[in-house]
Image (cartoon, rainbow, N blue to C red):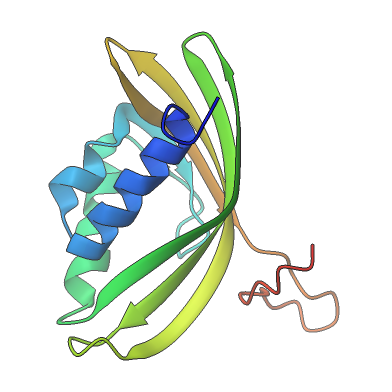
Length: 146
């Protein structure tokens, strides 16, 4: 399978575009109505598209004039019939309206997709970051050495 036909790569490309555009509708369209997300920010988990849409709306509106560039690294997937599982490292970089990088963080993502009709939808998403054993703080800068 190449990147053009890999549903995980396609979904992550659409995810990047939706986040950069701060387009809640395009973002929510990537997800199944019954999505279950284990997000690493603020809430233990979110269930259902409306909860996830509300999260995206709050996130995007909190950015003001900033945009977020998502970089995808080490994307890998396994496809079996109408199901696909993927994983990647995502780096989120906030940029000013002038294009200046403001801050950045990385996390790990695992997604489960299912095909309905001719489209793939995310039905499960799990994000995480490793925890430093001494400080018990999340490690949000990916060195690429793992």
